Amino acid sequence: MDDQRLVVNECKSLLKDHPILEGVSDAVLDGLVKVARPQEVSKGQVLFLQEDEAEHVFLVINGWVKVFRETLDGEEAVIDVITRGHMIGEGAIFNGGQHNAGAAAVEPSLVMQIPIRALEDLINQNSDIAVNMLHMVSRQRRRQNHEIESLTLQNASQRIGCFLLRLLPVSAANTPEDDITLHLPYDKSLIASRLGMKSETFSRALGRLKSETGIGVRGGTITIPGVVALTRYSCSACSTEFPCKDMQ
Amino acid sequence: MDDQRLVVNECKSLLKDHPILEGVSDAVLDGLVKVARPQEVSKGQVLFLQEDEAEHVFLVINGWVKVFRETLDGEEAVIDVITRGHMIGEGAIFNGGQHNAGAAAVEPSLVMQIPIRALEDLINQNSDIAVNMLHMVSRQRRRQNHEIESLTLQNASQRIGCFLLRLLPVSAANTPEDDITLHLPYDKSLIASRLGMKSETFSRALGRLKSETGIGVRGGTITIPGVVALTRYSCSACSTEFPCKDMQ
DNA sequence: CGACGTATTGACTCGGCTCAAAACCTGTGG
DNA sequence: CCACAGGTTTTGAGCCGAGTCAATACGTCG
Image (cartoon, rainbow over all chains, first blue to last red; front, side, top):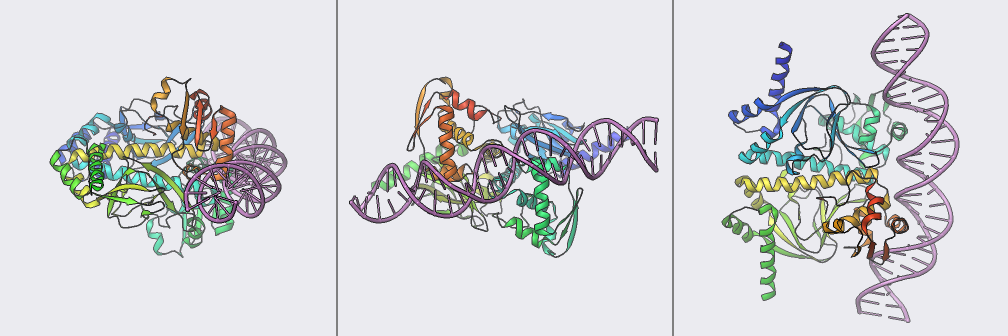
């Protein structure tokens, strides 16, 4: 199938462009591309569960995948929701080959499987990759610091405001008076879990945000009459102001 | 001074034993030891602030140091509290040389300054170190995942229980019926911030924990009549049961 | 003993959760 | 084009956990 081949090529080019492989020789790169396999996943399909023996690391090509932890009594905490270009499961490499969170598609998505052994070997043999990987993990750590701060210091509405601001292109900071329209990348209920609240709370908190900052809400479409008000409202309870670097 | 020399020697040996330098040649190691300097810090003394240009990475030799973020309107979130053998500030290496959190001693402590450039060079030249570092950062990330989960899914008492369990030696899991006495490593009010709650809430929540699990509290000394009850109470709202590996 | 910092307690408020019902979408088939 | 079924989102009422502010108790060090 020609379609198939197109997909494979796109995967490869996305893989090659991934920051983790920056500066790596073509030979090594081709080796990795050869063992990587695209995989279509349907909505709700689980990629792996926490404590699973890790076979693969996944690179998201299209769609959205949530990373979550599930408690013994059945509650779920959404740690992250990721999309195109992001990698999941690589934590297992340094965790005795065991995943430390689960992952599932939240809509039909395309991911690429990379055998964990292949990546592991690469890291050990190629110091560039280890350093690139360090960059990546450190950035994720910074994001998580921000996450922890958010959960302890911001209220529900402020967290939503913060979430919206992170959806904007960084360039929006240069024209803080301009109107912007964006729309939510995935279900409100998922955003709610992502932000550590219930969907009812999300709904009400979004209402409050609306009246406090003058944003408009119609379904999943948000209009922002300049980021100034939103920034003032959300970033006051945060240690870093819009545009929060590294936080997209 | 002989005292001085003793300190220096202890620093060196602690540095050499640090997981980040595992498997590194003596020559390289000595080079690093040579540029590292011990520093005494008094209670409350700030090591660095968020957004500071990072000059040094710090290795804690003795005492306790908190890592925190401060919001624009003056609130503080304690991200972590660390002690002997742990490193802080290394995140700056991958953040354009800027710290992404502040650090301050919470009691008189001894730390070792390591020039950030020295560590940076080491990482780039020595792939072992990059890999060791990856291990370290990945572990920190796992801890943070746990932190986020805690904040969203556990109530105040459960978080305290979880905190207590993490203070225990892993071996306690083998004799779950035995009594254990431990005492809190630092002020209750700091533990409270560390767990994302106010000290009044901590006090009340500890009371609740006491009546729910039968632990005893006298000042900073806690007695646990077997970890079973505590585990059942705290770990039920958590994705991983005592003993939580990597979480100490 | 007095003074200071830390911890606890009490009374009250408020944000976010729960449970239940209604409203809104979106896609499907008649 | 409409009706209907399914899911998602919103709204309502009531509750409960954690925060706030203020007063009191405790501990330790001078």
